[in-house]
Length: 233
Ligand SMILES: NC(=O)c1ccc[n+]([C@@H]2O[C@H](COP(=O)([O-])OP(=O)(O)OC[C@H]3O[C@@H](n4cnc5c(N)ncnc54)[C@H](OP(=O)(O)O)[C@@H]3O)[C@@H](O)[C@H]2O)c1
Image (cartoon, rainbow, N blue to C red):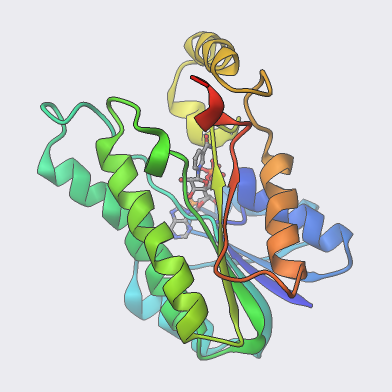
């Protein structure tokens, strides 16, 4: 099978690229920054430089592709968090532009070359339902994506459409938080989830592999969050 992983050069997407290659699949990992390409190439993926937020670039890339089987959408920006009083509308818009629009742009563009029997997997975030103060913007961005999944699964049949929903996962996404503060934050967050640890990229990669390879699963939002929502139970 052939996978295109948008955001496959880092974190969850990179772990999914490695798992797919190790399982014998062909993988194209997409990102913007070529400095991240060697990581994807070292796990056996080929790389392509595409800005998924750019409609023309994304359509050009997918139109140039021979047919492929699985589209995985791991793109994310970092904007859109903070308390509602402090969150600017500009930052919230940037949040949608960094995650919602690139994932939707690629999902639409890929339809031209995605095999009908294949799948689309979005990557959301548990902020969509975590009800945590300071995450209203992230909740809106991710809930918007997740809300589309069952409807797309219905409209695009027989192509399967699912989403995997991470809790906190230790990836380069967090590198903006200085190392000591990040360690402390992860230790605190680990006490808040049922499994007592933050996630590893491989936890999410195996959820992505399940959704792409199990041909009886569609329209599903698969939480892979260590039991985040059980924290107050
Ligand atoms: N880590 C967490 O705790 C966590 C929690 C909940 C949800 N998630 C979600 O999980 C997904 C993966 O996140 P991650 O933690 O693995 O982040 P990451 O390590 O920062 O990886 C993000 C990937 O997306 C690529 N990317 C970003 N914008 C792009 C664009 N416009 N066009 C093409 N590629 C783009 C990045 O490469 P370039 O920068 O080079 O383009 C990189 O390969 C995201 O949707 C994120 O919101 C993560």
